[in-house]
Structure formats: C-alpha cells, structure tokens
Length: 481
Image 1 (cartoon, rainbow, N blue to C red):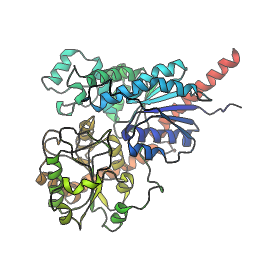
Image 2 (cartoon, one colour):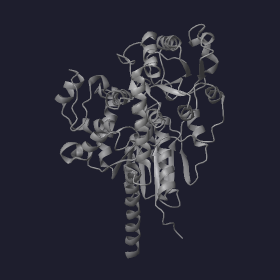
Image 3 (spheres, one colour):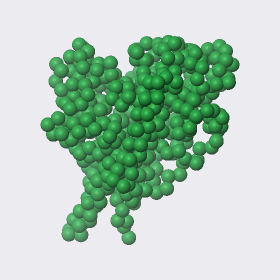
Image 4 (cartoon, rainbow, N blue to C red):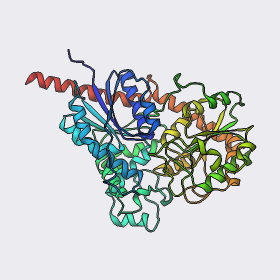
C-alpha cells in the first residue's frame, strides 16, 4: 500500500555551509511533520562532508550523486561561486536518473541557492519546487533585486561606490557588496544574476532566519509595494536551523581542556570550513591573542596568500606543519592559556560549552547562528561571499558583535587592534551589553522553533500542508481519471 506521507527531495550543493542546514531541514520535516525525505548530495572528496554523512539519520534516505569533473569547464582561477554553479549544473542528469530510480517519486523538490536550475527536473516530474536560502533575508533580498535594476543604478553602486537602495530594506554599502557583482565580465556575476532571476520562480522560499531576527527585511519581502513584486513566491522563515549538540561527539582534547577553564573565559577562533588567512595576518592574529592574555582555542590551517576561500575544496590535514606557520615561540609562550587545533574542531560542542565566552568568526551564516543560539558574542571577521553583509547585520543591526575598524579583507589587522577587540567582548562593559543582547536573541530563536506557536515552526507547517494538499489533489485526479 502506498504511503500517505508526503515525500520531499532535498538537493544540497557541496560545502558545509549548505549541507548542514539542509540536513537539519530534512530532520525537522521527518520528526515534526511526518515526511519521507530523500537527500541528494553532490559528491566531493572533502573529509568533513564524508564524515558528516556517515552519521545515522533515521528516515532520511541519503543518495550521493556521482562526482563531476568540471576542470575543463571553468577557468583554473574561477571563484568558489562559479565552481559550485557549474558543478550543480553538470549534476542535473545524475539527479534526474536518481529520481527515476526511486520507488516513490517525491512530491516536492527543495534546493539550495546553487540548485535552482534543478527546477526543470522538478517540473518534469510534476513536483512542487522550493528554494532553501541557507543565509539571511537581507542576502536573499539583494540577490533577487539586483537583476531588476538598470545599468545606471548598478553603475552608481559599483563604479561610483554609492550605497545600493533596496526597497524596504537596509541599503547595501559598497564595502559590503558581494564580490560577485563587481565585474560584469566575470562568470560569477553571470551565475549570481541567473540565480537571482530563478529563485523567485519557486513555489516558496524557505530561509534560515526567523521573524524576530529580521522583521523589517521579511516585511519588505512580503509587501507587494516593496520587494513583493520581485519576490513573488511566499517567504517562509524557518530558522534557526543549526546542528544540535550530540552524544556522537567523543570527549576529545578540546572539550577536555575546556572542562578545566573558568566560566565564559575562553575565546574560540575559527574561520569556517573554507576560510584561510594570509601569512602576515596569521602572525598578527597570533600576536593579538598573546597580547590579550585571554584563554583561547584556535582552529588553524596553513595560510594561503590572496585567497580567503582557499580551503573550500581542499580540506587536507595540515597538522604536521603547524609550528612552521605560527610565529616562533608562540606555542610555548601561550601553552598555559591557549590550545591550537589543526584543521577542525567540534564547533557546536565548543560554542555550547560554558567555558566559552566569545567567538572570533568569519561570519558564515551557519557559524553565526550557532553562536547566537548558544548566546556567544562575536568578533566579526568576514572573508568572502556574503560574510561582509552578515557582519554588518551582527554589528549594526543586532549589536551582538564587534569588528575591526577596517575590513580584515582589505588590510592586515594588527595585533594591537585584535587584542582590543578580544578584551572588549571578554572583559569590558561594552561586552556585557553585547552578551545580554545575544542571550535575548538566543531565547528568541528557541521561541521561534517551539511547537507551541513558534513562528518558524508554523512556517514549516505551512510548507507541509502545501505538500499534503498537492499529494491529495494528485491522488484525487488519478482516481478521477
């Protein structure tokens, strides 16, 4: 007998920033709304991705789509965005074949930012199609709005460096603009504008944010006189979707060390799964940590000059060379107060630990939400993609972070300034205010996900009802035929 439960297919592009929230969405669809879920993941050789997928996810059918070699299709110097867009495009035949092979075809296809070209596959199989924007509403707003503006408006922003006004939303300063929009001749520009055109064609837009976090922007996306004319599809904020602290993480060196540190005394330093620093910046960061005299956990990987996203597709273990790329004597001088960890650490468990009182972060949206949902203030250190926009939200709108006077992506931030920022959030009066605000947002996120009237819970319930109605309509139509 055929199941009456809706069957949803999720498509995640490579990278932890997309895979983690898509997985969490799948788990909520199964646990809270009774879905069958099939998750399609584009294969990569990144060890962290493979290890994440080895974990048991009851009632989620995970299918690894074959690896696609795109080396002959892109420039060797292509950006991460271009690489992901082309990779997802070349995966479409495998996705179609994998859906055909399923015993029960899904009734809905939910794709992330880079999967919008899969809408054609969804339409072929008569599936509802949704986009899951794994970032914030402001990023979505600029992504769909830029393709609608004329060249003169664009020139004022890109060439004359004037702020870009978005109806009903905070204007985007030139300094925060996505690198993708700065060169019309680059393939990244073409791919991003295509994505911005395709996203509103969905039956709905899911977002990893919540009503109380971005009320103004979400209101503009729903207001037909503002961005509603561009968004078209209904908007469903369903966040914060973050990895839970799980019993599957063993008590390793980092967690054992944190157990012996005072309450909220440790600053955690990490630049995500793909971020890298230059040699000069790594030396200054080490100096700043040492000057601050604060306890720290620092996740390090070898420096790469002139490529802030240099580790995105290359997560090889570089632990053997740690002493060679840190300042001479740094490890010995900070042995009593700091812990340097090669390449990877259990970030969710670290941020949830009571000893951690601050997070120096690249401002990837996953890391941002993990910090907020654990009540941890931040030092905003954006590197690439929409991270500069995220940093602006954290510092100017939410007041839960501090950042360098000049963007770290524009210059080397010196040790003395790094020391000042660390002390500000760990010791100073200003830091106490930041800590209070981030704890208020933490509770707000908990409330949003509550099954007792939470705004994000209700949003996902609307998606579930939409899929159920579609399933019943298709059955009734088949019986009538």
